Each structure stands twice: as structure tokens, then as C-alpha cells.
Image (cartoon, helix red, strand yellow):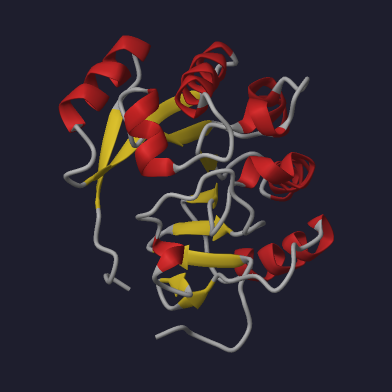
Length: 210
């Protein structure tokens, strides 16, 4: 059941406020919830078009007025770093609007440097007020990553590792996440996380949960 008749930019789960700023993604993960559902938590996340920064801020302002949120998270039905300039503008606005008191997180597939060639993505995120990133890593090498995530370019796994390393260097709090399913060798993914010296968060795969 999807709440309301229009797609949402801002939505919430528990005490976290989420921002769905794009439906574009450089991966075509076979297990992605958007393959099965119109949204999550009762919210429709299938955007009719890509929202402007002004539209994101307007919907965000309305959501911020509802309650005090524990964090704001850039995470929706797409890869937020595919619209890096919008992400950065909105993150700076959140920092100013909330006085830096609300943590800002970006959930990402880790392709930011491929999608924004020549940009110092992690440094720019940090400079805009982002404090942490959660990076999806649903594979332990190029072959398993390609099979599960089906990136639109070669070297997707290496791109994720590069992003994690640069995010750490930039001073962001970094974790990697993986979905618990037979196609992911969690012990090998955990070994990759340990080699990067970042924590691993394991997420359950429940495609029909919402």
C-alpha cells in the first residue's frame, strides 16, 4: 500500500528523515526493492521527474516542521551522487537551517567518483556538512559484485573500494553494508570491510516487507 497519490521527495522511517532526490542509478541490482515496489514505508518513491534543489528544499522544509528528526539521510530510489550538485546544495541548506545539529548521512553505491569525474566527491560532501556515508558492497570481488549489482560500467567493485578509502581520508564516518542473501558471501564481504578498516552492517533481504 503506497500512501498518497504523488511521489515523495521527503519521507521517513522511524526517527530518520530521508531524501529521494533521484531515481537514476548506475547499478541495476536484481534484488533492489524498486524492482518490486513503488516505494517503502507506505511512501511512493517513483519520481515522475528529477526534482530541482528548490523543490527538494521546499518538501524538506515541510517535513522538518513536523518533528525533531534524529538524522537526515540522502537515500531513495536512486543514487544520490548522480546529482551531486543538488545533493551538496541541499546538504548546505540543511546545515544552515538546522544549525549543524542534525547529522546528515548519504547512503550510496560508492560510484560517486565515476559519476563525477574530476571531482573530489568525498571532500565536497564533507565540506557541505555530510558527516557519514553508508556504502553498499554486495559482493567481495569484481565478478560477484558485477553479478549481483550489474553496474553500467566495468570496474564497479574497484570504484566502491576507492570511494570508501577517499571517504575515510576526507574525515567522513564510513560503514559498508551488504544484503543478507545466498548470492552474497558475507564472510568474504566482511573480510573486505576489515581490510578497509570500516564496519559492516548486514541488512536483511525482505522484498515484500512493505
